[in-house]
Length: 198
Image (cartoon, rainbow, N blue to C red; front, side, top):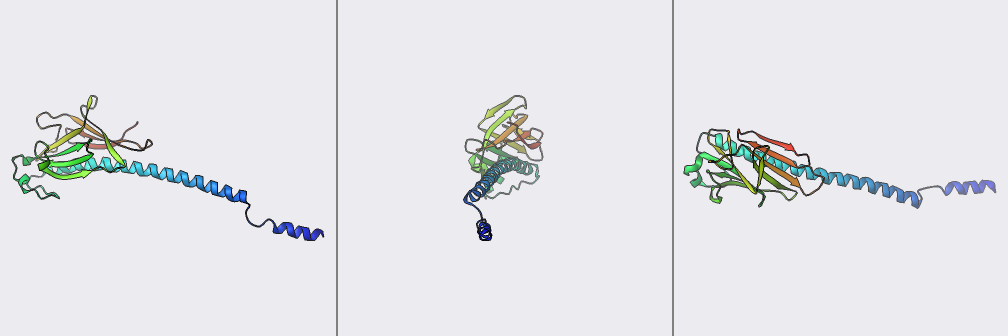
């Protein structure tokens, strides 16, 4: 009789109990939630970095247009009258935080008729601050024009007639954990992108 009971006890221990099964599901759920949270934070930081570099590359593209010696400015938009315009020696970028747009234009002043290219900002990131002046005394604005004159890499920040030495465009994300990035532009033509410590 003793032998039969031992065999029955061995057969009862196959598989998982309900408590063990629930424990495994809870552990798996915790690991998955940590991974998903980390991925969303990673995705937010990538969107911020991409926007900062998109702004810097737009400024660099206008600078490239500015240093070309010929009068030919190519764009995605066919605007032959811009090429023949008296202000063709100037090419600029307008960065507008109120409309979240980046616009490359031809001329000394921005006007919608002189737009060469225009970009919208993705919904994952936004232009949170634009300031111009000096590095120590930077005044906030809603938009900034950065203008380049042909055959020069120097930037005219603000306007051709009253250029400022420095501008900073800060981009931020909707997530509180995302790290803001800043694009700094100097009147010498130097453009840099760096993370901003909150």
